[in-house]
Amino acid sequence: MIITELSESLPEAEQRLLERVGELAVGFAAEAAEYDERAEIATGHLAALHAAGADTAVLPEWVGGTGLTYRGFGVLLRVLAKADPSTATIWLMHAGAAVGLAEFTRDTLGSFFADELLAGKRFANALSEPASGNRFLNPQQDAHPAAGGWTLTGAKRFVSGAEIADYLIVNARVDDAPAFFGVPLPDSSVSIIPIWDTLGLRATRSQLLAFDETLLRAEFRGRAPGPGDFQVIPAGLPAISLGIADAALAALAEHARSRVILGKPLSHQQWVQFEVADVESRLAAAHALYDLGLSQADSKRPSFFPTLMRAKYLANKVAVEVAQLGVRVGGASGYLKQSPIQRYLRDAEAGQLMAYSTEVMAGEIGREVLQVTDE
Ligand SMILES: Cc1cc2nc3c(=O)[nH]c(=O)nc-3n(C[C@H](O)[C@H](O)[C@H](O)COP(=O)(O)OP(=O)(O)OC[C@H]3O[C@@H](n4cnc5c(N)ncnc54)[C@H](O)[C@@H]3O)c2cc1C
Image (tube, rainbow, N blue to C red; front, side, top):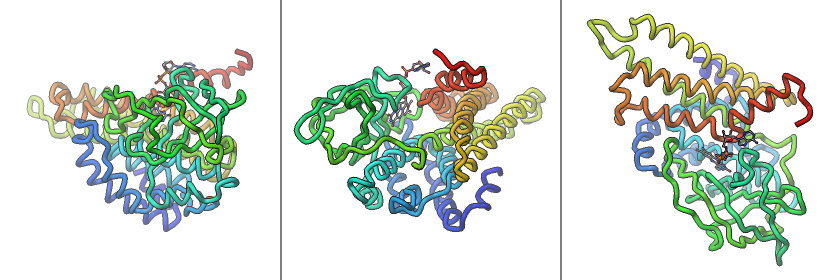
């Protein structure tokens, strides 16, 4: 409802894209459980998104795309995440890596990475590493000077969509400062450590990658992220949890209406109504805060970043609450593997882990509110 109202205020080209994505999302939702069960990347979904123009749209105009508003981006991702959160997560990481590389290397490589994205090549974010924890923009692994650039030996964790990527964006410490590189794949020095088998978002196949003297080529080095860049990841992550929460609430309501206990649907029990009112109101507040952050980003207000951080914090927590209520309302039938209710709970948990985690954000927000300036 809120999303539909928001869509009406978007530019016409974005509304058309959102209609196409909305149509695709119906098919994605029908297949999401099977991809999750097999822990398989829905490559067809990603190809369909490219064909629908999602990749061109997410690329800002100044690097050769058509450029989505943040509000349009937020609607698109929520629709996708409600239908198939694994596809939404891979697409988000792909967009973040591709747009980042296109922006960071614009002055040195021209349109190279933008052209690759427009041609349908796939990108993945290899930023998180074992020792940096949630501070994925502060790599702890040093790259060492070598002919043609620098070499990296180490690991990157949870690289969503790594197996289908043509390029990685990789960060490493160079001369004590974070540096960002595009790494073309396949590269014999980059291998997968096959431990992928997770509780939730199983179809993202976010692999652990090992780097063994991998050459980070000087010509593929980009500048550091800057204030004018399109903030794909911070603007997108709240949408993953909000989409999962929307889907979990819809499944809960469907179950409550259809399950009859002692002659009446479960939805007629007062405790269910009260609890649903509570989570639904908080979910609506999380959507509204997210929409505020997106609008602030579109108006280039610096306040957008703290707002989006709070939106992610709230969305991550609300998604788990909605999904947990779903398990209670679902009873034993919702606990069956064939029910979507259990999948929403597994997927909702992942939102809190993705950087910045709810714990890291709580520290940031708490320190800001309490005006704690030292460690
Ligand atoms: C489904 C999924 C997909 C992902 N996809 C990608 C991807 O495509 N690319 C990518 O680079 N990364 C990706 N990640 C990684 C993710 O974004 C996190 O950066 C990474 O998970 C953090 O490491 P960790 O999970 O080992 O947790 P840890 O960092 O070990 O966290 C363990 C606990 O410590 C807390 N903690 C960690 N650091 C701090 C701190 N500084 N202060 C206070 N508390 C802290 C955490 O909140 C958590 O409670 C993905 C993660 C998931 C779950």
